[in-house]
Each structure stands twice: as structure tokens, then as C-alpha cells.
Amino acid sequence: MKHDAKMEYLQFEGDNYFERNLNKNLQKETTMGAQLFYEFISRQIGGGYSAQSKRMLEIGCCYGYNLAYFFDKCGFSCYGIEPSGKAIEYGKQQYNTKVDFLQGTADDLKYADKFFDVVLVGTCLYQVDRTLLRRTLSEIDRVLDCGGFLVISDFDTPVPCKRENKHNELTPTYKDNYGDMFLRFPYKYTLVEKKSYSFNGEFIFSEDIQERVSTQILYKEKGNLFY
Image (cartoon, rainbow, N blue to C red; front, side, top):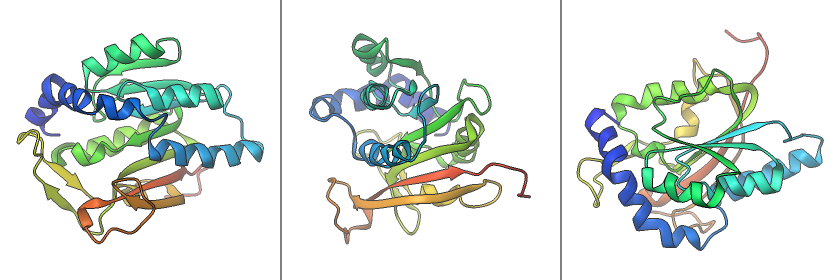
């Protein structure tokens, strides 16, 4: 998001988005992307992975219902960053003992380097203005520890697509394959699993390029073998 669009999300559109979608979100325990990651991490836990003492960040966490789910199911220490002050206020009323909330955007993450073991990015990169995209990707990488998992759920198009936001003309959207960006230099990630589905949540291929969505699970490689 360039400066004016970023401020628009922080001051207006973040709250408006939260209010438009609150009733819909209340009807579900988790998002599709979070559920797919839970299924994945459950298999890892069955194979000896321990979520205890590990930290999870969700970028674009809304009022924290995904994070509360992982707190209960896996025992992650959960942190969420969200532009909507109203969403955070609502989330603190529901999950203040389970989620550490922070108002902000992904281009400026107020966390230490390699602080997290899991980063969830839930359908928000398409809202980031292209002038801040590179910094946003860099910030996500910075706060994720080597050996951690990056989970990106977002629109997934074979070519970049720009679309006007019918709710706010100051915040256009940008659809792309965001997981693929972390598979290129200078990042050191491996694609572990990818599930494609349509925007309405059905596991079917959509001929409409604007309706294609995926959840991609990436692993941040360890070691000094790379250049």
C-alpha cells in the first residue's frame, strides 16, 4: 500500500472491511487457509513436531479467531497484526488471554528478527500497494525463523491482475501468485504443499481468473548452504 492507501486501511477501510464481514466470519471456526494448515501441522505433530513454546504470527488477523483456534488446538503462542482498530478491540474482548494483538500493516512489523516459527498471511497481500510489496515480503521473511513455516492464503493468478475495489476506490487490489515470490532469490524457501480452490471455498477449478485462490505452505530452509 502506498502511503495514502495504507492510511486509508488504517483509518477507514480496515474498519469498514471488518464490519462488512463480521457476521460471515462469526459463522466459521477458521478460514479455509487456516484449516488446511491445521491439517498439515497435525501430520507434522504426529511425526514428532512440537508446537509447544513456538510462536505464530497472523498478518491480517481480523479479530483473532484463527489464532485462538491454533492456541486451543496446538498450543502455539499467538500474535496478530491487523489494520482495523475495531477488529482488534473486538478480538481483545474475545481472546485477550490467547492472542497478543497489534494494530499495523505488514510493511512495518514491530517484532524482532526471526521471532516467529510460523507466519500465516491470510488473504491480505492482494491489498498491498505495489510500492510497498517488496518491503512487505522482506518484513515477513525477516520475522520468520529458519526452519519455520510460511503459510500464504490469497488469490492465485498466473499473471498479475489489478482490480478496482468496489468498496473503496482508494484501495485497488492486486492478484498474483504470492507464494511463488518466496521461491526466488534472495529468499530461501521450499514449497511443501499447495491447495488450490475457488474464492467461494470449493475445491474446484474456476475458469474465472479473478476467482482462483490457493493456500501455499512454504518451509524456510536452515543452514549456510545457500548463496
